[in-house]
Length: 264
Image: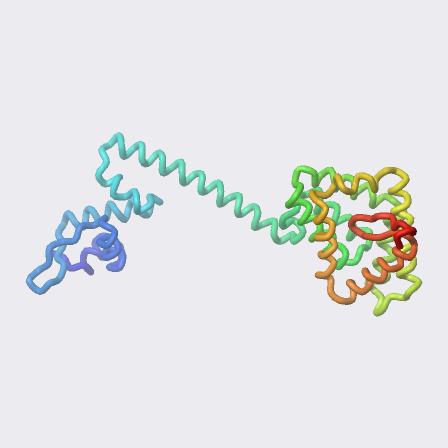
């Protein structure tokens, strides 16, 4: 007769595993000897080896009892079903690995390739990283709300990067970001360029489509708050540019609107 330690050694498991199998009912509790210790025999070793083999093959412990009691046909069917489940789990894990590998790229987290390509092009044009980061976070919000339209939006943004006014805006923002303290004339130039872009958008009808591009009226306000993450300095710069735009008859950066002078 065997002690619990000897049983575990014969079956290639730990005594802790044996006790766990007792606890969940996979391995029946044996009779105890006169000293009160568990006493095992050959059939217990065989059953424990079968339990260990099934567990190591990936069979959930909740189904081991079923397989131990199954006839050949039932056993084959259960194994086929477990194999199917394992293949599905492997596929899921491979997809997780693919997503984890993409995280090294940074921008690709929660963004499709069209958006990351747009951000890369912004960098290539010399846009300061703080502005690229703000764009990235804004597009993460948009992509989460309107994933079916993100490629359409990115195509439009790519075309905007070809606009000389947009390139001038990015150049000016780059100069402001690099300066220890931006000059008032630099901020005024940015406001002038933004107003010129807004005027052009009003003429070609793009401003009329702003509401259609947003899921609801509060979403523009949510996007505006993204700028708060850039730190106090960039927030001060943004606020001053908005003031200068208001003096020129326009409001907003995410959603640009003409200010009615009669109501000002």
